[in-house]
Amino acid sequence: MPWPKEHKTQTRDRVLDAAASAFREAGVTQVGVGELMRRAGLTHGGFYAHFNSKDELIAEALAYAMEDSRTNLDRLQVGAAKGLLEAANAYLSSEHASHPEMGCPIAALGPELTRGAPSVRQSLSREIRKRLDQLADLIPHRISAQRRRREAAGALACMVGGIILTRGMKQPERAGFLADCRAFLAEALAPAE
Amino acid sequence: MPWPKEHKTQTRDRVLDAAASAFREAGVTQVGVGELMRRAGLTHGGFYAHFNSKDELIAEALAYAMEDSRTNLDRLQVGAAKGLLEAANAYLSSEHASHPEMGCPIAALGPELTRGAPSVRQSLSREIRKRLDQLADLIPHRISAQRRRREAAGALACMVGGIILTRGMKQPERAGFLADCRAFLAEALAPAE
DNA sequence: GACAAAAAATGATACTCATCATATTCTGGA
DNA sequence: TCCAGAATATGATGAGTATCATTTTTTGTC
Image (cartoon, rainbow over all chains, first blue to last red):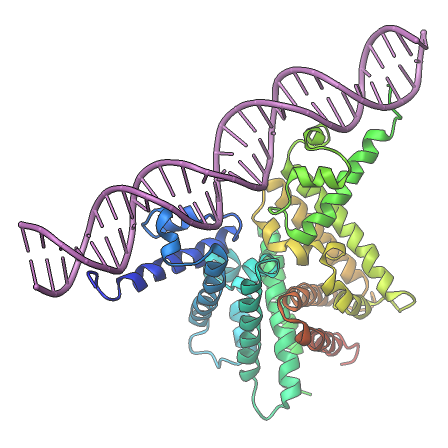
């Protein structure tokens, strides 16, 4: 094998990383294969040595971006108790709203992915399920599983919708709206009752 | 004026109506000017006699679709007390989730519109503000304006995110997730406390 | 019934895009 | 130093795009 044995995997990962950012920033349909390869330091032709199709890349880039956004958002809540509410507060932040290319791909690309190829939709549904389970796990286990599932669903919906709506607003209104969403969740998720 | 005086307005409206449906169904970038004109019973060339650009059409189609979705969703809650919770329940319905072409354009196109031309973003921010005001108005006015605003924000975020997430899920999971979102809001918006 | 103007259709331009076939370059081992 | 094969580059294809200039059709009025 006349090449370093991990070389191909590394360039493949570079393409994947470039795709995960570029897609979240500009949308999957607006970013062409050629530009992705250029961002990865290559030319367009070699693309199909790494992926069978653009759709396959999209499906993989989604999973990659989900993982990436989770680590980026975790950095915003260092030291916090890391309950569901803290996770939601980090998600519903101005930093997240103003940096879609590093943020949650569901908020950046959700509707577009829903209209994508079957492989893309399959990846999307899997990632959503995974995220719901992760969030439900942040709720104390003394709470019933049913209630944990309900709160995770409501919180994730509020998070995704909140960021999407924030990004659709003009600058002066954004901060107040985000604060409203956080306050709303703080009450809805209160451990009381 | 050798044409019925409302003829041009009527065909313009036909294009607008076709655009509002097609965009919500397939996304603004996936629907070309040619197909829209064909849906309106015309050919591609005449488009620019009605609109200065595709972006101008998108901005107008968004407002048109917002109005259209409101009437379609109102039909789901006939006779109800028409409070914020009832509006949210109609929004978070299986019918809405499975018919994006008749539903809320923010849920169908939000992120895509955010990346659009300035005129599109302007229209989007205006429509979001309008919807927030409409929802806040559904809350009894004895509640403080601040709290009405907060509940409208949280509810709309939950509604938009809930529908987007539902559409990203596979069929057997959808109904349960929608029910969880509705139950979550039912508790969060409870008039008690 | 002919005319003028409005409305729509035809046709063309200049792109961009995903995909693939072919050629070239690079690398570790002989 | 040269070779085989893997990784990448070149170039082409065919389809699709927004936009505009020009021509054709349609309609109310004389």
